[in-house]
Structure formats: structure tokens, C-alpha cells
Image 1 (spheres, rainbow, N blue to C red):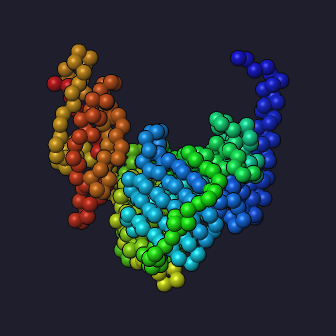
Image 2 (cartoon, rainbow, N blue to C red; image 1 turned 90 degrees about the horizontal axis):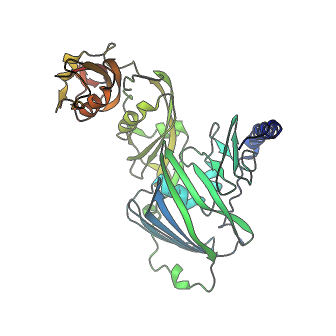
Image 3 (tube, one colour; image 1 turned 30 degrees about the vertical axis):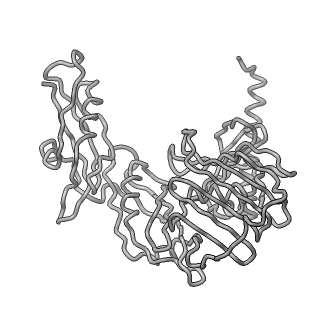
Length: 417
């Protein structure tokens, strides 16, 4: 269908107005804080409710978890979580709390979704300067599903969609429906990386009537030191808890930025063990996996709140320099093959290449021996894929400099027999 010039002009003008309004209201919001349509179901005075939700991962509809909440009042409620990584039964009755956790760590994504589906305030409070926020209140989202961020416009299916890109706790609120005079998102999405996300689909939300008080009965309260509580810490306070850290040995990327700013969101459990590392803002995403593997090995002192160890989270900032470590020049074919085991040769497509054809592949290996990148070098076009499939099966070792493992780049050569 062809859009007439006048209609296109009107649409362009609308986008401009939305962008201007978003810029102005984002500025206003910096003072008052972000606001979303999502209702706080657990506020004092609200109706009691019964909620069920299914947790899925990515685009796979298979359930990996289930959540059920019986909420009678702010001091009288019950929540159960059953998932592959974490399960919990939590009962609050007045000053008494019963908590039974399958592990001593509450994963960030699951924690974010379970919180946001009944109370968005903790997610909004986690927003920091620079985080992307696209809401109806700041003019970046409207009821038709249009989302505007700066010069970028997109449309979400199913009407109003809001995004609160809080560091470490990003949530998309979608599929808003009415409940007892309020609007509640029935689909919430937690993004944790490029192509990585968790979904919470609310399958049941109804008023809790004639509830059984035995649901909230507690015979043996759980001591506070055995309960999982979380705290977001400033970077300097978080770094002061570090017992054992190491400089990040950045891999020698082949493409993209070689220097820049990098920030990661770290979450540690009550013992100080790093459990999750999420990339937030990266100058070159090819370095992310290597940095995450190194950061997960850091050791922290337990963070204390009221004298009791808690799960702790914070942002850590770093300066990327992919030429700070390792040889300044790429290794040649002989040198890199001396660092390889299981060096299987390529299987070239029969009849499509000639004997004597050759090609080279440039690779980047990090300080732990992981292949992080491979791009075509010189030689006959069309051979790269077969060469890459072979290289991906190789086991690399890092190069040693002064006895320390270091990353490197290398050129690997192949020739058709």
C-alpha cells in the first residue's frame, strides 16, 4: 500500500512531536523519577489477590518455572516459586517469616520478574542515569503500541508497551489488562543480554476470596540470617568488599573498537561468591564473554545489612584496551599451531574447490585459550566456512609471557590438497 505524501508528512510530524515530548519529559522525569502504568498490587489498602505466572526463556514456549502468590495484606501473604535454578516458599504473617529456598542465591532475572509483576517500584528505583526508559509518562510510549526513543520509532503489538531498562533489572511491561480498576501487565520480559531474556506470563489474576488461613500459618519462623535479602551498593562500597580480584586481561579483538568504556553488573551471594555477571554498556561486545569468565572468579567479603550477610549487587566500570596484553603482532601459522591440540583439518566441498587453492583465517584467542573471534583472511573466496568449522573444534592454549597466560591474534593458513 502506498502512503500519500500528505499522510507521510503527518506521520513524520507525529514522530517528531513524540521525540520532542520524550526528550522534555525524560528531563522532567530525572527529577521525579520514572513512572509506569503497571499497578502496585501489594500496596496497603488494595484488594487481596491470587496470581499465577509461567516463566519461559527466550522464544521457547516451554515452561521453566512457575510462580504463585496468595496476597491477603502487606503483612499476610504467601509466594511459591518453582524453577530449574531456584525454588522458594515464602510466607509472611505479621512479624513472622517462613522461608525455604532450594539454594542460597536468588537469580537476578527471576527475582526481577517476580517483583515487577506485583510492584514496579523496586525496578523504577534501580534506574540510573543513562538507562533507557520508554514509558507513557515520559511520552516515549502510547496506547497504540508506538515506542519512540530519540530518533528511533517502533511499534509493539498488543497495545501499550513500556520499557524500564534499569541496570541489572530491565523489564518490558506488555499486554496491559484491567484488574479491579487498575492496569496490570500480563507479560513481563527481563532482558539480560543480546538475544537473552526471561519471560513471565501471568496466566491467572483474580480477587482472593474466602482464603484458607492455613496458607499463612507459620509454625517455625526462619531466622533472618537464613533468609535471602538483597542490597544494591554503590560501586566504591562494592569494590571495598573485594578480597581477591585481578586485572581483566582483554582479548585482542579483530574487529570493532579496541578501546573504550565497559560496565558490568555483578551479583554476589551471601558468602561473597560471584553468581552473575551481566554486560551493560560495552565498547566491543566480542570481549564480553572473556570478561565475564574472569569476573566470575573474583572473591568478595559478604555484604552486611543490619549485621546480617545479604545478596549484593553493583555496577563495575572498566577501561577496555584490547592491545594492552599479549604480543603486539599476530602469531604466524607455525607459531599458533604449536599452541593447538586436536587440530582437525577442513573438509572442503567436493568439486567446488581446486587442488592448491588456499585461504587464511584470522583468529583471536583469549588468555584462557577460548576462541572468541574468527574472520576471513586472504585466499580463495568460499573456503572460509569449511576452515572455520575445523578451527572451532581446535583446542587452543594461551601464549605465555613471563610465565603468565596472555591473549593473542593469529593467522592460520590452509591449502586444498
